[in-house]
Length: 246
Image 1 (cartoon, rainbow, N blue to C red):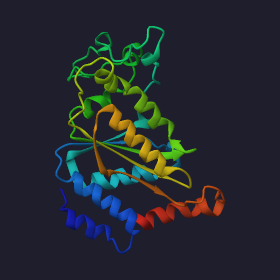
Image 2 (cartoon, rainbow, N blue to C red; image 1 turned 90 degrees about the vertical axis):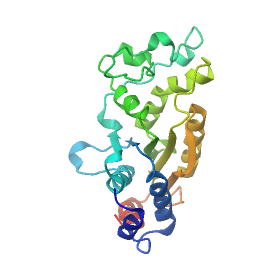
Image 3 (spheres, rainbow, N blue to C red; image 1 turned 135 degrees about the horizontal axis):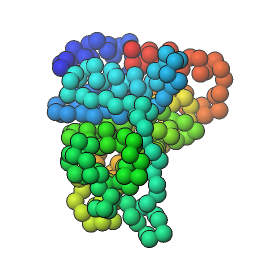
């Protein structure tokens, strides 16, 4: 693992945008003392485009800086079915019941994974996330802002994790993530990024994660929500590279 001082020297704060770099610096500083970190990226591109989402680039930069203790899962690469909405079915709330446990020691070694969609769809791969999540000290979600909200892959994922929250808020069982820190880092073009971060921070708090302010932040190219020019979009990636000196 690289020392923080060396990481920051390589990043070179003078060359990047100070606010953006400070956010990244604080995140790395918090993570450097943690034993196991899970990074979950949720933005996507067509595979043959050769393009990597900006939020994914941030995740990969953090992983490269902190080494083997960091695991990275690209959520769009997994087959994850939509939430079935059992938290609000005709019987009231059937989410996260003991009957919904995933009975597979390889996929569910902790015994915590309880989701009907995992049972009803044998090829569902949410277990690849939950298995790592319950073994981690920190989970960091990376997302892009699309039409003023977190992208659809992130939304599908957080909805599918509803059973974690439901266990302790509705079923009265233990909070199984009370010792796990969470974070949410997102990138966007011109609208609502700060509000998206604040909303997801509140969601994670409701879920029962430990919240740390240094793990919640947004990068947005412009504050002009009406700037939809081709020139603006063309300049965005270069500005992102410059701000983080990537």
